[in-house]
Length: 335
Image (cartoon, rainbow, N blue to C red; front, side, top):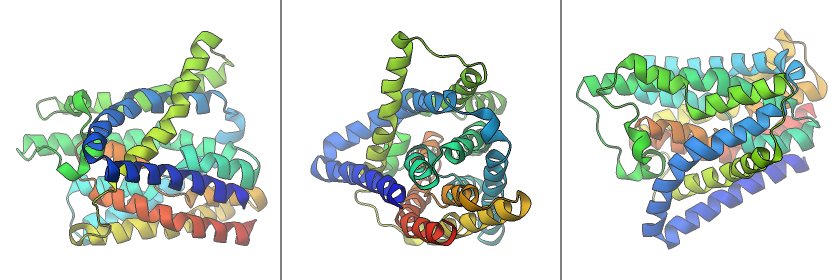
């Protein structure tokens, strides 16, 4: 129980610092947002993923936990797409961003202390990271690239709105998938994004027991440790002046929040218990990972491809508020 509380407390404090900074220093905060987004995307987040993957016990995590994470994420994202695209008739770009927000969990920072203190092992969180970074994220980034390419060819490519500066004003990065670039080249660049490449390199290091020399390992470790606080500060800054559940995206926000906070943990329990026969702490770890809030990386990715990020931001915020009581309930029922 203490690990659950500690993980959420750390996240809320850092998000609060970002929000206060944007409120107290609005001009400087906008400049910080424009600088932090590409820094996290290209440097600190890849370093963090390399660190986490290079220490993974591949045999322990790939047999059970990773398939469960993939099945749960795919089912949740598909449910969102069916409702938002089929019933609500939303465009492809917002549907793709919302599907990722409803199924992509914040395992990189909240999940680590929760897994270690509540379950006693990092295997569940490492498995989720492997599933998300090597399979889920590349799939969604490819869809994002296709949506942006299609919008550009249709003459609907436009600059991001001012309220999304924190995620989309990423300088040169914003030009990587412009409307004149071929779809194939855009997809290749999306699949070869820094986070996925770093994850693959980390897994290779783990598979062959390769340790970086201290002159390289310590700088990578320093950069990786900077990723989580920078990303949480960026997210906190983006919250200033925003009103969750705005009229334009209210249905998508409610749908994404319900799927992320309630449906996804139930799906994880069903898959883990009845398809893989898990129980005890193993099942608790699987369900707790599914109960984590939406990762701030979804906000970063959506902004990078200039998709609408308002509903993504709101789902991230609301799922964060709901994640603590849901996680405590899961711990009481399964712990």
